[in-house]
Amino acid sequence: MVAIGLICAFFVIRADLRRRGYGAEAENIVGTTGLAGLVGARLYHLLESPSEFFAHPLPLLFSTMGFAWFGAVIGGFVALVLLARHYQMKVLLLLDIASPAAAIGYGAGRIGCLISGDGDYGVPTSLPWGMSFPNGLVPTTERVHPTPMYEFLGAMLIGYILWRVGTYAIGGLRPAGEVFAFYLILTGTSRFLVEFIRINPRSFFGLTNAQTASIASVLAGVLLLLAVRRRIRPQTVI
Image 1 (tube, one colour):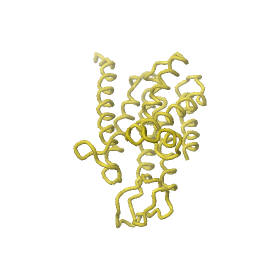
Image 2 (tube, rainbow, N blue to C red):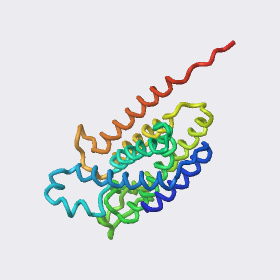
Image 3 (spheres, rainbow, N blue to C red):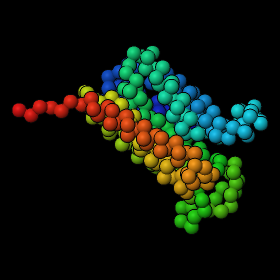
Image 4 (cartoon, rainbow, N blue to C red):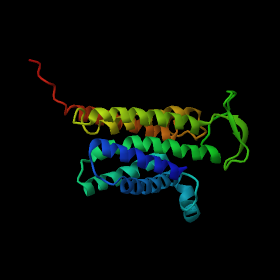
């Protein structure tokens, strides 16, 4: 499902590059960013429990379980900054192009969490769509919230919104960086909300680590949005 997510991201980025009139290679962007995102996601997850990681570094480092979305954002961001320099593009512009693809690719990857039952599900529920994972990687016989499905649906909606916002940026109608700012705000908000019904342990002020990172994501997005919108000069009405 991670591979399918990367394939989906490739088609979205290629379409966005074409509609904006850029000749950058979508496969290079997705390949480089995807690899950096996976490395970042793995390292971020391991460093959330440093004592456990340093006690058994090699087995945990090469395990197929445990990837953190915020680590993927950080790794992907670094890769996109370097790719922007390679293609001689504005960093914020390339971040805008990658944002809808990142949202949709993330949603596809979450389906992998659902079908493997890897512990990303939520708390017990009596709702009719509750699911149990008796043979999952982290098994449970209780009917629980299928939170990966919630995140999949949210990610598809966010991807659509970001694509629509991007249409206004074509031709310079909106400032570069606006789509990425909305990406940080919307994905951070989505993750913050879903964490209330996920089984992740609480840390700061009763929040999970992901919720703390979500708050940082939303704040960064708001600050970026305010900064880029200041570049829009109001038109003089005659």
